[in-house]
Length: 327
Ligand SMILES: Nc1ncnc2c1ncn2[C@@H]1O[C@H](COP(=O)(O)OP(=O)(O)OP(=O)(O)O)[C@@H](O)[C@H]1O
Ligand SMILES: [Mg+2]
Image 1 (cartoon, rainbow, N blue to C red):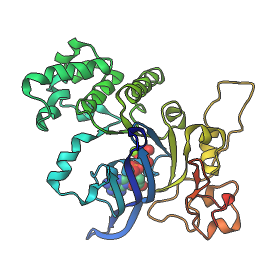
Image 2: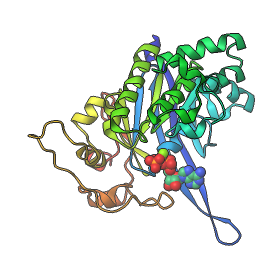
Image 3: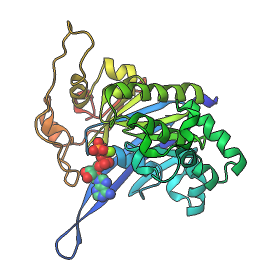
């Protein structure tokens, strides 16, 4: 097996439910099924985009994969090791190899720490560089991330949103991680800056061989970066496919609706926008049958009764929909 095909991360039927507390005594009155049976694998050096509307469970998948949330059920295997079965010390040792990049990097930076020191902090904490070598490594990742050497001495408030995101990425990259989970890393940025940061991710993937789980509510953002795309709806993956197949032949009506919202470059070939009715149902009480059936323009009687499983249609294309033989 060559390095390219090595499975770095394997997620098996992962569930994360949060208790809902209510009443005067704060008793548990239900469960929010934020992630309700998610499976995927990620090969080294590839990027998986995880998309879906707000509240579909994307962040919860990312955090549970990294062991930042305790799981409810299922398994997360990182290089074959069960992340949730590790002891505190073992998990701490694994931490540098799995990094998280946030939507709002300012919130995770200490305002009183020079950014060079903030980027180097974790290197020292994990004993990954001698104090004398930290500056050199920090300057190297700053350069890779498009930051200038003189930025080292500056403080977070002196940077723009796009530069702060470069700092957040540099901080993750300094540890030479195998996996970066990027949670909406460009959603807070202007469109023109978004493209620059996406290009940076693309370079990191090509030149540094970093493996990404890239979370976004916007399919257009993941299009150029991701090898594969998984579409989430109410705690489950409804479709997963190689990028080109997903864009050219979406099979799930929810994916079709998401794609129809992306403006096309060619104004002579207008796309029919599919506007979904209704709101995302509560993940504390997901509908019976297919979770999407109440909003699906193509729902049939069976869709309200039986939950479709994610079916392998070959060539890496998976879909959970009765229209595609899931019964
Ligand atoms: N710590 C928590 N306690 C209770 N419920 C939570 C917690 N974190 C998330 N949830 C709930 O789980 C569901 C999924 O949330 P999550 O943040 O994973 O969605 P998301 O897809 O990342 O959404 P967004 O695009 O808005 O970031 C939501 O209903 C949310 O309210
Ligand atoms: Mg989120």
